[in-house]
Image 1 (tube, rainbow, N blue to C red):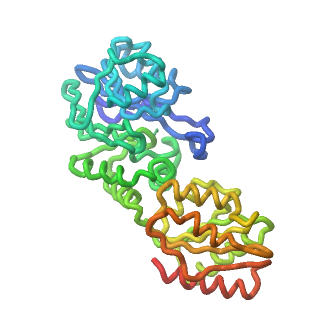
Image 2: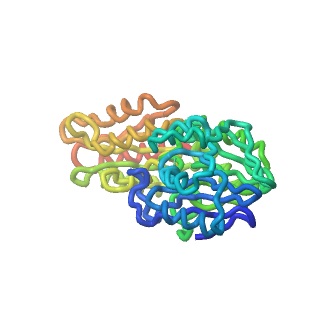
Image 3: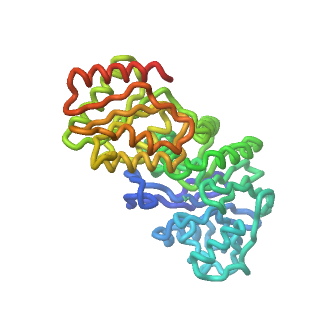
Length: 388
Ligand code: FEO
């Protein structure tokens, strides 16, 4: 597939439409791309590799785009195997090519391939450049966005940022998803824990006259760069993108589901926008995670099981905490027929999260959503809509 960036910068990546779970956990119904690029100049550089299942297709792309010429360099911005597992074959087929990467990436490559590649390594760090002729790559450190060895690079003549996983998105080139939707699910699931490191990278990028962003997944960005950077700034500072409510629940016999749905109806009647409901035992939890980070308010509703939280709700709260969930308004609804205690446990599970504000009101249901529960739901909804 050829989606050239310019006369001299060519697309050599692949689309993966067969994968079900990206990184073993993120459903990708529209697939994903592993982006690789080629800079043709006096010297030729291939920028990053692809997942090992697409090695053959990638090598064919390189051969075709270079018309049989051997590349001088493979630039490795990120060593995670979705980009690097194919490099072993590349290095074998192009024995003269040098690998340009951070010192840590070279160590990782040696471990991954169980091979000493030090004689072929050109180790680069923040501020170093690779001159190919009229094109020059300037390297910028991006540690923990989202691995420690990550570099991004800025091609000075065409003002292109090769951004590694930053600004990546689930989906292939033919899906019609809006960038923000699947870019947000990608960001919060994979990069979101490292907001401070993303902020540091954004500050460096702000000083550059970037006209094109070439990420390792998803589309090349041009006109939309300002909007995408603004969203990344919001996401990485853990600010809410919108006044919205995520209601995340699990239900044993349907009563907690009915309670959650009734709360959504009441919130809608009271004028709350952006209400999302997730059945945590059935829905894509990575969507529920994205929703909680994009919206300002979260309601957790759980039956009491074994004196604790329903397992799927517990796993969701663990995922929120692991991804640095913070700066949000959180409310609880609990159910149980003799000693409901899941609200207290949910609050405890969120205890390590910074700057959460818990609602004054809560909902306790001992059987079904009766009049007393309706009154509690109404009071809780009132408190929720009064918050941004
Ligand atoms: Fe796309 Fe972190 O690998």
